[in-house]
Each structure stands twice: as C-alpha cells, then as structure tokens.
Length: 114
Image 1 (cartoon, rainbow, N blue to C red):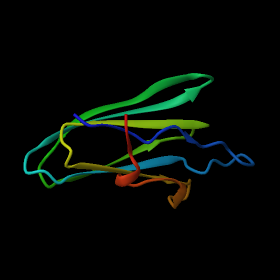
Image 2 (image 1 turned 135 degrees about the vertical axis):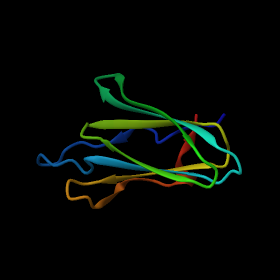
Image 3 (image 1 turned 90 degrees about the vertical axis):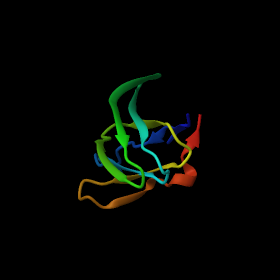
C-alpha cells in the first residue's frame, strides 16, 4: 500500500499574509478497480505535528476527487495512504483570493513515498 507525503511545507506569514490559506488536493484513480484513499493533514506546533484532518474514502476506477483543506498555519504536511500504485495525488496551495501559489505546488511526481 503506497504511503505518500507532501513533506513539511513552510507557510509563514509575511506582513500578516500567508502564501496559502487553502490546499487543494486532487486524487485520480487510473486503476481498473476501486481504491481506498486516506488523507491526513498535520500542522506544526513547536516541535510537534498535530493531526487536524483525517478522511478515508473509496475512489472508483477512473474517477477523480478533489478536496480543499484550510492550511492557515506556519507549517503543514499532508500524508496519503492509497491502496493502489495507480492512484496519483497532487496538491496546490491557494491564497485568500483563490489564486494558485507556486510555493505550495506538489504534483504527482513530487509527492514523496515514506
């Protein structure tokens, strides 16, 4: 079962404005059977990672799902557990106006196994 992570992403506010306020996650299942997907989101509090998102769902074969999560923290990380190598995950940070922020762009090829 593939275990994937964005790694810890810094999101420190500059003059009171964070680069990203939401993280848009897109998951596609390129397999011929349904796949299970677990998403866990963490924010960093001091030296501790705190779980604040936990979602488990089944993604049909050939289907795509999009989820949006609040990321108004100094640092955050998302981890994905998927039941198939054919499931691809990408994530994009968005600012308060909904514009994509390249600082928090993690395409499928960049999501790291752990």
